[in-house]
Image 1 (cartoon, rainbow, N blue to C red):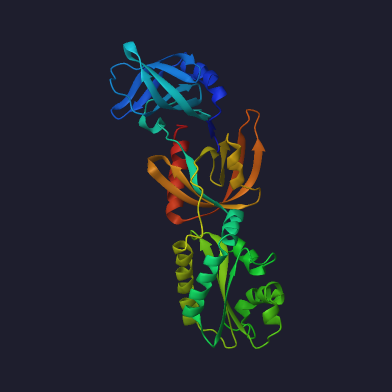
Image 2 (cartoon, rainbow, N blue to C red):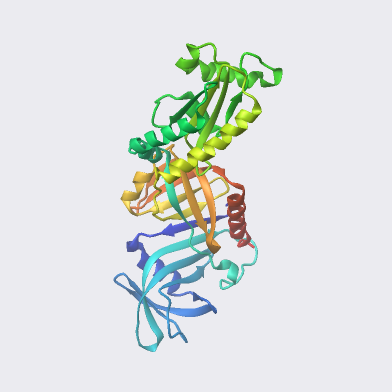
Length: 366
């Protein structure tokens, strides 16, 4: 976002100052099924906030109250605690989200539906190093998977091997798949068409040259390498097929189907287990985003330069499945930790949902 910024605050010691600043002398509204209801902020005691909410008898367990102060809009997400006399309700604040926008034109009223932003968070988190550890901790299951694969793909004419990300420290194919995430298909690297010259030269110099089996057995002249992709994005291994004969495209197509079968085996054997913790998105743009956390235990899911598969839950229960790279992990002055991500890959439907959300934020400038 060029002219807007979204910040999320979960550090409870900051809540009273934020409520006094945004709610004491400004109009505030409660989001309800029947629309927006004007409310009055009565004060903050301990970890609880009091609001007067007229004409409401029953309060939901989770509510959102919002207000505007200049070019800032605040959304307070609260849990209902108790109801007192004269329509006064007591809430326990859980988090606060602030959208700051540069506005050069007339502003819309704060209670327009387009201003009612829902919480944005990431979940279903899987980092590449955790994925590798989970494979290492499941060796017996992996052996069973290998036996099934060998029975299914056993062939005298083909040399079939399965490699996983925990096996080789310097694996040129895994290094290639980490950046390209597309198969290698070379029907016969002893015969080079002009259009394939660069691809085959790269293969010979960077992959074949580091494979001891191929270097020591000159009879192998062809290769198919197909990455195994966690959620279709993050490589955790690959199926490698070599042959002493040129491999036609129908074999290539059959082996691609086999990787779908292998991927299902990893699911059926429950090799991987995602982190279901939810982490609030604190800012977002076309190319990346950041989350802010106040629980140090959550840092264990991330390392700088690691790749992370995750789901971003957007307003309206829309979702964006994303592969991202961790760019920085910074401690903040309020004891929170900010983690920045660069988006590497996003599927078509997720990209639509993601772009629609960004456009909804940009429209609020008008």
